[in-house]
Image (cartoon, rainbow, N blue to C red; front, side, top):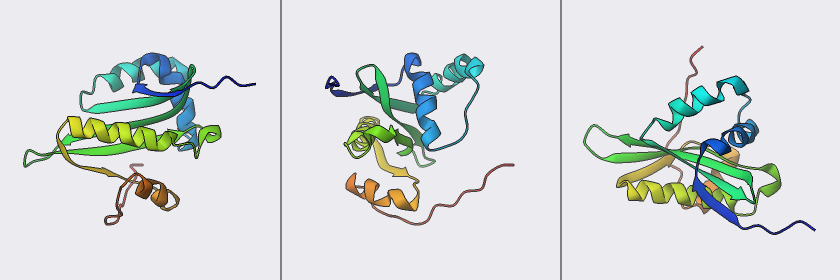
Length: 144
C-alpha cells in the first residue's frame, strides 16, 4: 500500500531542478543536457523578478509553476504565470490549482495589480476554475 504523503507547495530549490526539467517534458520537448544544469540554475535563480514553486509529495516533485513580476512603464507591477505542470499520475487532484494559487499569492505580496497567463484552448476551463477570465487573444512568433 502506498504511503499517503501530504502535498506541500514550496519554493524551487536546486535539489528539485532535475525533476522539474523532466516534469516539463509534459509541456515541451526541450531537454537541456545534464551537464548544463549548474549553469542553468545559476542564471535562473539570479533573476530577482522570477519566483518558482514546486508541489512535493514525499520527496517527489509532482508539480511546478513560476511567475515573472514585470515592472510596467507607469510604475505598476504585473505578474505573468508560466509553465504550470503537474505529473500525469497526479492530475485532477488539485495540484495545479494549488500551484496557481501560490503564484497568485506571490503576485499579491509583490503588489501586482494584475496577473496574466497564456494557455492552450484545452486548458481554459482549468484556469477559469482558478478564477481567471478569458481576455483577448495571445499571439506569438518564435525566433528561428
